[in-house]
Image (cartoon, rainbow, N blue to C red; front, side, top):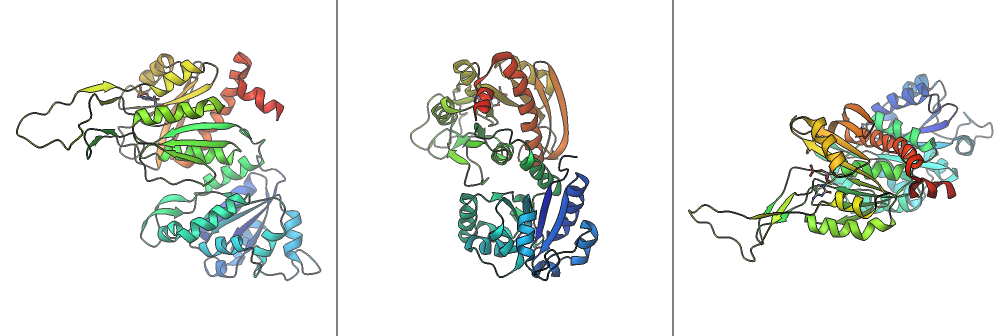
Length: 413
Ligand code: C5P
């Protein structure tokens, strides 16, 4: 029971994802947490307070009417009681109110009075999410130390598709658990590459691949939630990330190589999740290549292997690679683990249409020199947490073998 005796306020604001929060309350309790539910008035038009009362076994606080404090100051009583406040779903309106420190409902007064961690799990229409007002509000909240959990990408209740869905209950639960763990990566600098690279053919054309960047971005978010300072070097992708992640955008394999080597000296763990092009054009045409009836041959030159070069330059740095395979996944990945001298490789079969490249889901094999673990198909956001857990476990072994800088540093902090 990973949340044993933890006192958690789960707060519900007005959004259709509120129905999922009922499950979150149950699952947090199943992990041993004591849960009290706070709702805004508008949340009660989506799910009845009675549902949360029955599930949590406690009255639901909507206004300061003395349920938790005889003097009627429930917001103060709950602020002192809570180890963690999780607002799920957090509507655009609630995010704006939190940003401005409003206190016109119990929830907002509670957040002002609470001295511990507050996590918000945004849930809204994708345009509302992308709106500059919402993005600026979230940046302010993140700068003030609020934890921003999500949102996820995908189909929305309004019929649109895009970022703004509340994270799934399993992912939120993992983040809650993580919040109470000894922040495994606290104050560590984790460098992650993500997405594809584009290799120019001429000024308008390029060679690319189907990588969406979703896995690398999910790893960056999970590392941030585990207390790390995260630098994410991303090839061309549509993914967005928390403003506390240092995002460096690149286009080609050569640019990614250069950016990685600018950051790597200062890092404690390197995760090469990008689908880096293996070849680039030997000569990029300076003008657009004209169409003709003749066969066109493009001469390709191998790109430098970023992971191999990093490991060669920094042999004690824990390096994790990814292997996207279409056949003999484990054999090919194991061969890469050895050839690139990696500490861990995450292998996945990208020939299945419902997972891997350009999907929110994946299933992987986590392979090290002496172990292999299968992780069944799940959301990349949840998978990212599992991969980081596996890395953390392996780092402990790594430390024993090589007295690596990573854990020496965490002992001194
Ligand atoms: O050899 P392959 O490209 O399949 O290996 C995949 C792994 O190697 C990934 O972790 C990827 O980020 C990394 N890689 C790299 N530099 C390259 C090609 C791949 O770091 N030029």
